[in-house]
Length: 314
Image (cartoon, rainbow, N blue to C red; front, side, top):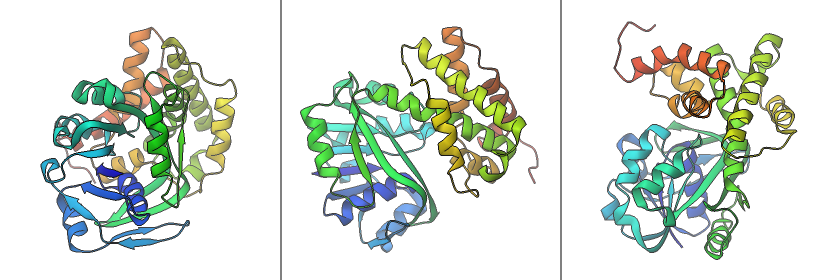
């Protein structure tokens, strides 16, 4: 199976590197310092599940890669529309496209760009980041890629892709009968935890023990459940308690990607997380006061990172 990984950061670099190490034909579509590093030296993955160092192929143009069997789009949410618009050279008659962005709207963006018939909705779990150009650090959570047909259920092509990708060590690859519910399951955890971590700028081991903060987290999770229900997505009754249990087992020094991006003054995925909750809540007449407050408090830093507003940030 020939795989193109669009975005070679902490997520795409980890999964693509593991697949390349397992013998799959993997090509990265990258840019900037990451592209230069992958061309100049080995891709290195540091992980509790075993380290990897290998030479990989990286290109800066989709046309230089050509048609593939699978495209894994692992960009940030705010990069997705531009990335999707440039996928045409990778697409053959049977090419499948899987997006693993945070949030709940990636499949719609990809479908508009390449056609819904090509798109498999996906989500993943991993705590990893780009430690330096060409160096991926996996620091927690069993890396898991979950995907399925937009219409629900698994298909023959899903099973074929799953079987090929599962050859990679250091990860779990699974199919979902209801991938939309799986995406919202992750969103119920990820959006509130990311937003509250970004506002507090404290590691998870600190803020999860503070009652006043934890109460806001639970309220934010219930907001996600309510919006999901309004969209026809039913989530398990015990999902909030399950999510809190997962939160309490995270390494105490843990931080979310949104939190780190806010801290470092980079553009963030705020719009796809808290912003999406506010938008979707309004669309369905569901109040989302915690997400609305978090979004408002973080928006000035996001606009500063985009260059829309300016002031000295220390």
